[in-house]
Every structure is written in structure tokens, then in C-alpha cells.
Length: 157
Image 1 (cartoon, rainbow, N blue to C red):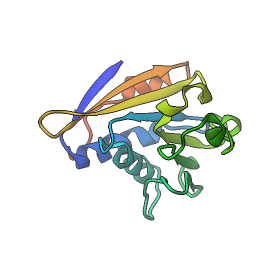
Image 2 (image 1 turned 30 degrees about the vertical axis):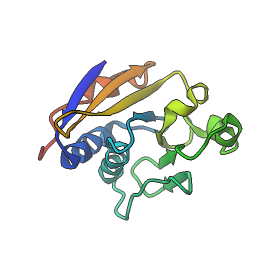
Image 3 (image 1 turned 120 degrees about the vertical axis):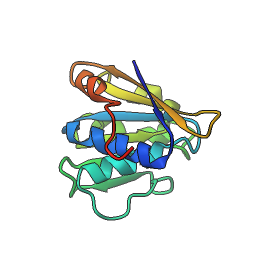
């Protein structure tokens, strides 16, 4: 496990951008934790780091946003509004996650049985001083190198 402290949105964006070059077709990054703790901000950093130029917003209402123009096709899911396993399964996530592009999945903890065993999990939490912590755990041979690189000093932080 690795733990980093993000003093604000700029650092969270930079952490995402720093991870982006390491992502690959089939990468799975699960984003969980406190509401407003930086999951979407991190995803925006990843998207920018992969070359996405347009707006990157949380897909809370559309559930999955796709960015095929990214260096690695990026899929960004937000499961906050879903309550039942059938709703999440109905999105075809079991068939696509881990195979079809690189995936960032917010609120992944709601459906822990959907995700492949080989993945990077990021837990976002508020700190008392107004910052955030991000704890990273990798499972599987493809994602362990991501953990080793996660938390390198972001440029501009």
C-alpha cells in the first residue's frame, strides 16, 4: 500500500496526470471514498494526462463517459446513483472492464464483485486540515507497477 497527501485540487490533478502515462489497454483503477474527496478531480487529471482536451465531468447521470481520443481509450464510470447489482451489471461492465480501454470507476465499492482481481484501488479521504489522502493498493501483476509509481512527486505541486 502507498499513501499520499494531496493539499488541494491542483495536486490531485497532478497525481492523476502522473499516473496516466502508465495506463494501458485493460487497466482498471477503482476510485472509492468520501464524497467530494477528489475522485472526479483525479479522473480529470488522468484524462488530461492521456491527451483528452475537452471537458471531463463526473458521469453521475450518464453513468459512463468514453474518451476514445485518449492515448489509451479511456472509460470513466460513476456508480453513485446505482443501488442494485442488476443496474450495474446491466451496463455491461463485467464484459468490458479489464478488456476494453483503461477504466476509472468512481464509487466502485458499491459493487465489489464486479471487478477483475488484477486492478489498482484508490481510496480518497478528507483530512482535518482540508486536504485529502489517497491510499493505493494494487493486486495482480499488471497493476503492481502502477502502485510502485503512484505517489511520485507531481510536477507543479
